[in-house]
Every structure is written in C-alpha cells, then in structure tokens.
Length: 217
Image (cartoon, rainbow, N blue to C red; front, side, top):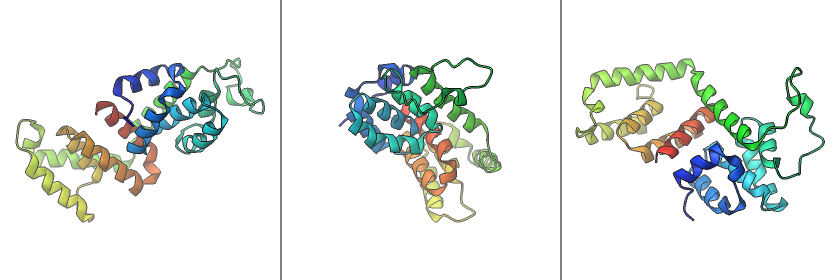
C-alpha cells in the first residue's frame, strides 16, 4: 500500500475532522515506513474510531505509547463520535478559572504539534555541544556548504566515522544535519530512526525531526 502523500498529510494535520476510515491503509503503511513519527499514530487511532471498536482497540495502545498527552489523544479519538467516556472529569483537565468548553479535533492535533515544537526549543547541553561540532566541522570543510560541489568523498568519510562508534567520532545528529544540507533526506531519516533506538529518552525530539523530514520527502 502506498504511503500517505504529502498534501493529504498536511491537510489532515490542519483539519483532523477530515480524517476518515478510508485512510487507514495509507496511515498503516506510513507508520511501517516511519515507525518513530508520532503524528500518524494519533491519526490512525482517530480513523480507527470511525471503523469500529475492534479496530480502535488495536490501534489505541500504540497511539497512547507515542502520544505526548493521552488526554488529548482520547479527546481527538472521541470527538464528534458521541462516545465520550463519562468517567473522565473535564473539570479536572481544564484550568479552574476557565469554563469547561469541549475541544474540537483541530485544536487537539494542533496542540500536539505545538508541544513537539516547544520540546525541540528546550535544547539540552548535549544538543548545544552537537551544534558546536557542526560549526567546527563546517569551518574545517567549507566546501560542504556548496550544493554544487562533489560531496560524496565527505559523506563516505563521515559514514565510516559514524560506524566506528568511538567517543571521538562526530555525533550522529550532526551527521544527520549534514545529510540534510546535502539533500539526502532519506539517509537523514535513517539516522534519526537509529538515534531514537540509541537515545530513547529523546524520542519525542527525534520524532519531531522525523516528521519534518517526512513532510519534505
């Protein structure tokens, strides 16, 4: 089954109310190709809620495992389906001074994307060090910033250093950024997928990067 195309993906992110059960095969194929991208899991759970209880029970646990907010995921899945769980106290979720207004599916998914963007901005000391490595590498190899140069020798050298895995080798995220500069998006996606396995504590940050790269591919 073909992956979900870029235009449809962007449209569903902006308008989750357009999600239907018809896109389930495409979303499943997308998740198989990009298993660490969070947004398709939430979309699949929403689409599955329209296909029936059995399909929803199959996809909801995976979506919950990747969701930044399980409450937001629940509201996305159950919005407009008249299956809201009465045991969930909305007053406990909202700020005390706000009236309990129901969230629509657009607000829920947009909020999820905004949370991922916010997490990316909160850079750790390790991320800042990686940026310094990139800048130092670019100064030593100024040709890499020019897309019209023959960059293949540089890529081969970096790949061998990455495979070495030693402390002195270039950081893998720095390597991913270099691949992006070269326009090698698919290879950069592969690097970020390996980073998620290597550093699961930064899963959400790398998942956001994968989502951005998928939108560009």
